[in-house]
Length: 238
Length: 238
DNA sequence: TTTGCCTGGTGATCGAGGTCACTCGCGCGT
DNA sequence: ACGCGCGAGTGACCTCGATCACCAGGCAAA
Image (tube, rainbow over the protein chains, first blue to last red):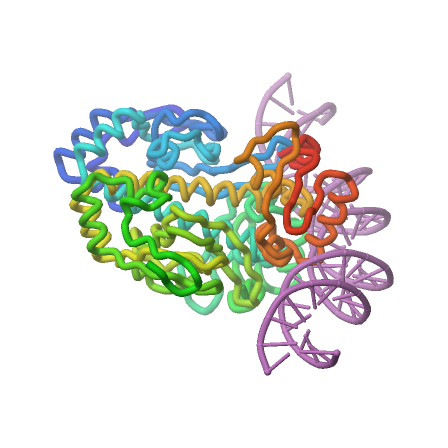
């Protein structure tokens, strides 16, 4: 099955590669079938807005492929990115459950597919499937912990270099590699990194220069190489 | 019934003055009785720690009277206060539901009574009382929104004066009074205010001076008088 | 190719606010 | 009365990072 933007559509949750981690997919057969009926799927281009901060919640989006960023802005235009989402993430859950406006804007950074589940159908589905409701509660509290991590970063880690180091480490905790070096594909612009750690484009640029000079990292094309993990951890401290 | 610290113990949830707003109190009779059996109650002095960040969750605390502050700290000792709690609030809910360590420390600021519900009993109770489980989910998402408000304050409202103005306004949105002035009893030290808005004691002190000079506020003993609400709102902007 | 536009790098400047160092005043216990 | 400790007010200093202002390279559309 072919689709726009050169992507294949995943129209069957049973063969979906993100099936395992997914709170709405790895379900009992009847529940899964019910969910298949109420969901609709679509491919979104880069830059597409799944939903915008302040909108009334229409439903949740289940990101299958692609990447999205969640952000919130002030009226003067300052923006912070609060989370980067990948395949398997459920977006807009809190707003739907509490029936309050979306607290963030969700924008596609890389084209990808997302399933949409309308609010009413979802709530009905949850009432009928207690098992899934429990997963939703767990997901909500995971979201809450993520939010608190953000609060700690913004409120306690004072200097940009500290936050930058923290971010770099968060990108490489997953592979937990070898000697002390690790590689990451760098897909964010300096501007976006600045919005994550709450500083300016220029400062991020200077931080890269600094850290390169101090042998903490290295750039091979768009691949970021962490050279000295322990030194980064010492910068983070807090 | 008399108790330490000159406080009366509320031993009956049915006559509790915070009964209405309380997610665990305003229940059906059988559920309320069940809850009464699994809860224990105690009076805590000022400075008492209900629980500490990082501890495994033992259970939730239902604050009946008194005030508590929730805070999180970095290793170097920097602290931010994330929430001030009053009668009716449920503390530690997220940690209990998700079985992760308490994400904050809860410390009594004014002596008061709290009911304790052990984790196991609560989870069992929730399984048997779906209605209450729903309220818990709603409470979780309320907590989440509060956390996001905090993220916005820390990440978007850049200057201390902006955050300070925001805080002052948050203290007086409730009475929504008369002409444009409002009164609040000031119970926090400058140090604590600094920990709420993420700055230093000295800066808070200077902000009070500044705002007094600009006729925005006034101090009568420990009573804070907001003199010019609109001007504060203009400072907040964002 | 040319023309933009977006991203990135870097210097210069400047001001807000953190830090340090006092002092003052009040309440409290002995 | 005395000393003590805590909260508060304020001046002096100095650092860090935001801001402004350029410029260079890469990439895409015309």
